[in-house]
Each structure stands twice: as C-alpha cells, then as structure tokens.
Image (cartoon, rainbow, N blue to C red):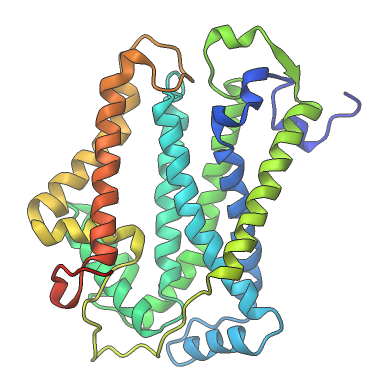
Length: 347
C-alpha cells in the first residue's frame, strides 16, 4: 500500500469485488461529486465578475458571456453542471431506493435527501441572477408556489424574496444564498454523507458478496477515475451543445404567457394547476413523508444492496409509480402547456 494519503482515509482498506461492477452503483455518487466540483470551480470564477444589483446584473452577465475570454464557456459549464447535478442526484436517490441500500443507513439516507433539497434550492437561487425576463418571472412563479406549503411556506417565500414580491432585495438574497449559504451547507452535508459511507464500511451489498474483496488501491481508484473523466467529458460535451440562455432584460410589467417556474419545479406547478389543495399541499406532503419515512417503515428481510429484491416489490412499485407520475407532470408542464396554461401539442 505504501504511505497512506488523504484519499485513502475516505475509503475502507478493501472493497467487495462486486462493488467495482458498473451496474452495481452506475457510478452515480462519483458523477454527482464531479458535477458539484465543476459547479463550484466555475461558480468561483463567475463570482469574480458578477454584481448582485438590479441595475448592473444583466450587463454583467452580458459582459461575461460576450466580452470575457472563455467567459461564455465558463458560464455554460456552470449552467450545464448545475442542471446535470439535479438529474444525477435524482438518479442516485433512485438507485439507493431500488437497491434498498438505506437499510441500516437511515441517517445517511436523510443526509442524501437533505443534499437533494439543497441542490434544488441552489439551482433555484441561481436562476434569478441573470435578471432577465424568463428568470425573473420563473422565480416569481416558483416563489409563489411556496405559499402552498403548510406552516413553512409563507416564511420560506419571505426569506427568498426579502418581502412580498420580487425586487432588489430578492436579487441580493438570491446571490447571498447561492454563493454563500447553500455551498457551506452543502459542504457540511457532503462531508457527513461521505463520513457515514466510510464508517458503514463502504457500499451497501448483501453479506454473500463480502467473501471476495480487493484492495481499494488501485482497483477502486481506477474505477472512480474512469467515472470522473467520463462525467467531465459528458459535461464538456453538453456544454458544446447547450448554451446558458440569456433573454431580454427583466420587465416586471410585462409577464410572459405562460409564466413557468424552473423546469425542476414545473411538475409541482402542473399539479397546482389541477388542484391547489391536493396538488399544492396534500400530494407534496405525502411524497415528502414517504421519502423520509421509507427506511423506517420498510420491514422487508432482504439484505441491502440487491436490485429489485422480491420482498420489496411493493415498495419499489409504489416508488416507481410516484417517480413516473412526477415525470409525467414535468413533461406536461414543460412542453404541453401554452398560453393561459392551456394544453397544446408542441410537435
């Protein structure tokens, strides 16, 4: 092994052979960390040139995009990695649930849920920073959805907006939360999450897979490096295809029709469109309770770390139905809603 380094302390001395198979974990944990690393590094770069002022923010974004050398590319990297992180984190949660890997690791499951909420909140607070027409009204709609959450909703909306409506205080608070509060909380939860994985002995797998073990160095390091470089190549490739959008300057007196929330909240907006009570309060509360309490209520006897265990069929089926329902609402709200929120055929 030689002299141990910092990365050795993040891993157990040995690893199960099955954990190295790509289909066991799909590499989602390392992929999330890679996207988060790109997000932080590009965010620190953009931080040097951005000013959170309603009179200067839009011009600063234009300056970064059109004038600074590689400024547009860095902003595109930040945009792509932020949106990709939402998708990768969701897939990571799906993998953990379908494998029952939360068994015996309930606290780490809660850390993961907290990280997912922070990722969504970080993207939401960063959405307003260009101060263009689409971002302004998306944040206005997204913040209005908070009113439907019982107890904490109005308070959360006031914290985000700095008042009752989007204004200069909103931009300042969004920047402070996006560049300061969220990264600090995320660093804490990521550290706790990785610490629990290390303390629990690495990846959750059935006991029979414990017989074949390999040293972490070099086998796991090679696998993690492959996932890291593949994710990095994916981010760069998507950056060459998709540009971070910039629209006309925000105009509070001329809302777009329809005004939509950011894509990761548009499924919630779609549910509210059907019923403010059920879609805005009951359904989100039930989904949230299900996600938080599932590890405590799951009494199946199968070992953790087994894909689609037979005695977890009911849990997995309920989870998949909930996931599909949210995907359907997201697709409907994103592509099948036109003026006045009427159903349209987009193709």
